[in-house]
Length: 573
Ligand code: TEU
Figure 1: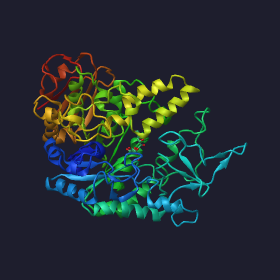
Figure 2: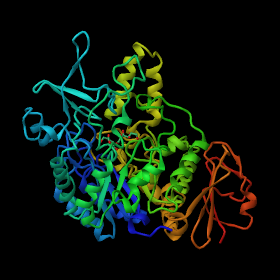
Figure 3: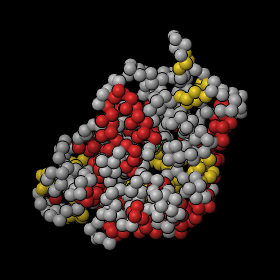
Figure 4: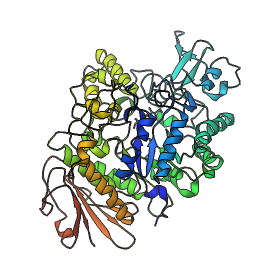
């Protein structure tokens, strides 16, 4: 049985600073805007706020390209504003965690400016610099054939010092060299202690398994002969020293504070390897996000991420079971989430955002999330049922570097090797793009949904009149009211929902998603979810004869048919 701690019981709410609340009318969200909504979050049942990067940044990757860890992006506010936000949370018994983005800095960071100034600069080795290669015709080539996450090569040529530098992400996000102890110590001071000493309660750790690379930088195997660059994620994820680095980060920094960490752990499919990150005795991270559910519907491999695929309910069921059960009998911990700033809205992806199904989908996903074991993460707008931008919106409404790069790559390829690629990638972006999570938060029915009195940096959703906090706070049957009730219910039955043992029921059934949760005192819940637009037979009828209904998102919950997107939770006592 897992030892209870505050960060296991917590409901964490992710705030995306650019889109949450603008207090000064410049069209960008800001920290005073967030401070004005802390009571709203308290009311909702939020225990911890996770604030996505608000550090100074040129905003090439929306703040995940940091130019000064110890300063705040001026449009968001000041370091003192964060002090006020920390106090506002603490005064209400809530906590605040920040985003720790230390695989790379921005190209504008002073460390990189020094490192790139000359080959013998003392900070040259704080990043990865390598000489060019040349092909048989004398053309200059990057040191390896790696594809970056944002398309194109993971190396960029620097004319001044005649070498390439590595960037797994954008060319404006050079990777820090964690092999260098001096660099690591500077990260611990500047990106971590500076904020922990101001009362911040922990971190969401960005790209947590990429700090250790195979620094001999061998080429990746050729999987696409028509291209020079090749996917190489396996060569820079879970590298040889990753656990040493994370243990050092824990011992040197985190262990000195009462904080928690959640790591963003992509491309680590094996539970044994995940336990090496989250087992308490490993003294590295407290928990991690797993992405295989998030990847349902995405194309296979990095290059085809936005080439949409179909997925089956049985795949989702297997994935959820895997990450619910891998901590059983261990001192590890897990997370429950289905949305964040990097992905399409869950209703649009896993439910239906059509007007007739939107509300049932939203409530179905709420029932799903609050009944899962692990620390629960909610993404801003999920609690009111926000959905993807309308598919009629043109590509110009997509502001994210990832969408823009994949779309322009698709345009290029459509003219040469893959004529239908542009149309496929556009369809993929309409379902999966990170942009869908970044539309302005919808507060009320005033212009721009009350997010800003100015021109929002990103277009407000057309349906904000129906989907907003003010309208839904007044409606006892709204998505928001439902989430509030369910977050409280999760706490009332914490041994069952937060800590309980998960078991799939009828795993092969492609129609419904059923599972049980069992608490240490023998209390059992049966959860039945219909993830489709069609009524489905409820095969759990006899199991529920002696059980009582705890919650449902439909009126006629006694029927032997689950309505479209109907969810039910029964208890044995
Ligand atoms: O994302 C990590 C990352 O690799 C993403 O590309 C993610 O794996 C992908 O979208 C599939 O889910 C983090 C941040 O969350 C993201 O916003 C940043 O762009 C990226 O790191 C670079 O800092």
